[in-house]
Length: 286
Image (cartoon, rainbow, N blue to C red; front, top):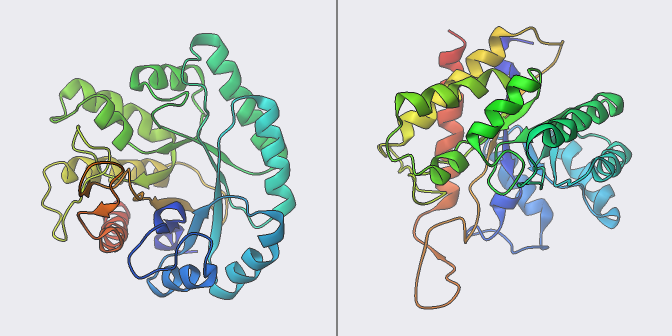
């Protein structure tokens, strides 16, 4: 496998919800598979399918030649163990992205939970990457840095949009940059979303001129370089998920109440970010 082939760009299944020109939730699953494959994505990041849909998903993954990863939301080691059993039963799952839903767990108790999740992952033979995400055990940048110091081999999914919006990082100070960079050697995956420090998800524009984009591009490329510089097993890949969520993640317009009309074209943004990620990978390979 050539080094350029170690990149795997996945499309978020959640990010397909409500896209203009696609079927609604629960309808025409194959239509979404076809759209993802035709536009050059390597895989899908989704959820363990319901039992009655497992056969269809396996068939479509094979038909369209797409890799597959899933998301988990454990609060305990028992829940993580049960999820790993479900993932193993389905098969064809390359890794699990875990949002550990214990945002108020700190100190030794948090380290013990994260260490236990890593041990379960190794025992099951399915990689588990812990996502940097608001409302989870990693919601605090300072706390997450402490986790890495206690668990140097902890595998992370990096989504810095959460830290940028939580910290209102309109500008990135040297102190913030140092702390953000300190997590990147532990990046085993990236979720691409750009925050401006006020909104969690903004439109970078077709030309990528938003002032926050260079910061995110720098972090993503740095994570890629760290991953490439570390010893890897044969066939191991670096997954990057294009994950632009539907409302209320997407910025909307309209009258009072729950607004659903998106201001920008989320699918076009997804394709732009896919191209950007591929360009950053090429730079990281130089």
